[in-house]
Length: 410
Ligand SMILES: [Mn+2]
Image (cartoon, helix red, strand yellow):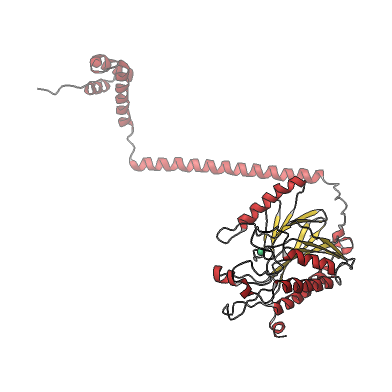
């Protein structure tokens, strides 16, 4: 029995007999209509089949011929693209060149503006500057031996006396140098607390001091008085501002008012010792904070012992204190530009959105507490900076209170 013919076989027969495509589709569909679910999809299936037959007939090219043909097409396309790019480049270059030519033609009679000479090009018009010296964390009376620290640090009253000479000599050198460039007449001394070491701030402190509290107060007042007296050779006016620290407090923390403080006594003694010199002006009150105004720039200062540290690092606390004080002082319509603190013995300058913060160093360097407890010690440093009427704080110097070997011998 012959195999049953499919619609494909029928369609092929019709193609062979020379029927047109349309007729093949019509006839095949009509004959096999029942076998296709929908008429339309059946017609499409037959049409696809008929076309595939035609393609098989016509695509008689060899593989190699087809490759060659394709190569030609690709080359042709690439050539076209290259030409197009060249045309775009040329057009764009022409536009730029034409633009230059037009601009140059339009400026044939251009005259440059007259140059205005800045006063800064010669030094006759230079503004004066004011020097600020931060003094804090002297902790006068501190006694640290080389032996007890394994040679890491040494501190005593004789070293303190020599440090005052180093401070003055360095101040003099910096100021004389800058006076060659700009007039400098005013010094502002910012006393930021912990001038004395105290004697009952922490347990066992009496074993780490070489002067009792009365001699600390009077002795360091003498040294500061002598230092301030010498600054009269460099400056016409000296403004002294003072805030107390935590080492000079009397009694336990919070037991007495914050102004019951030996630092405050030192400031009062200084004011009395120097009261007959007209060069000095004093800003000493019972407040724990002060704002000094220099050319309209406001310098807020307080000691900093209320600032919290996290893992021994106070910088987040300093930042927060700066923002909080900004808000607090709005009660007095007072906006400050710079903040100065001591207490942390880690000299640094911290920038901020609006306020720059200066943290002073100490005089004693590494204490037994910092070295044994935190394995850290900072070089003894006090900060000096200049204030310019137009630019605010400009140059700044760390004054290192380190004795050279020959100074130690004397
Ligand atoms: Mn302190």
